[in-house]
Length: 347
Image 1 (spheres, helix red, strand yellow):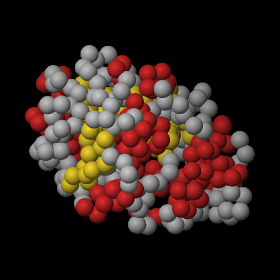
Image 2 (cartoon, helix red, strand yellow):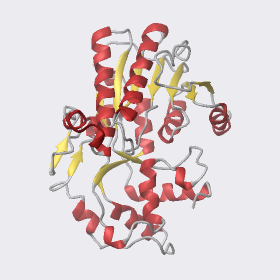
Image 3 (tube, helix red, strand yellow):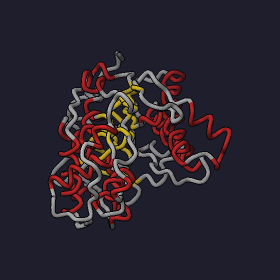
Image 4 (cartoon, one colour):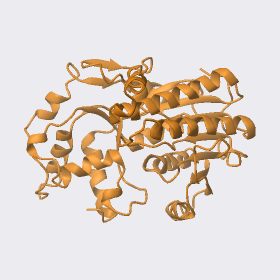
């Protein structure tokens, strides 16, 4: 536990990557905690969209075109008491590992450098990491991962295989190296602020960000879309097993990490447990029986696929214990995702 003082209610928080899927929900959670927000975006268009979305709430934005630049956040950190850094690429389509690793590491270290140099009021920095920094992809289930675990496999794969490494390992290495760099920065520089990292698995939930077309949907929600638009066939179910969480729980974890003293200096897995695509198919078929393209799969297949006796599980209990995070059922999340996509006329 850190002894650093906490940001005061009503103070400003810098939220990087503010127009992203997760960040918009984090903003709502920060408003709920009584904070004002300065959001970084890449364009006035994105910033104005957020101003309209958050109309009546204490939100302003600044343009940061390249989060990887050393001095990108130098001005933005002035006058804020906390930083929530969510801006990092999430996809598995990079050719060169550096396409993912460089911006993830540079952006993370950049915001910490700026806070050290210009953020005299900053008391706590919360960084969005990932279970990718925890899980070794070569380890088969059953296994329960905790915050004590670190991914040591992906960086080795990158070093040995370079661009021939899997897309997953390129992404996993980017998150691992970025988070390790953040903790090393704190250790080496001993700033007046402390650090918290939030490590979610696949994140699903209502889509609030600006999405011009369904093809531009964020990666995780894209998995859900494939189930409801008929891309996923019966034969593909129950589908690959992973772990999941609702975006609103991840958002609450970020916001609570700013106000809970015990969170300082800690990592938090925020995970509701194992899931497979069959879970989405079951939930949507039950709630919307008229949707004919949704695959049916096999009754009971999801329960069998998600059995902790065989699955890899990310233990999200520390986030519940320390941050008060409560995980909602996947059926509720599935309905809310579907309704949000319909509301945006993306389906």
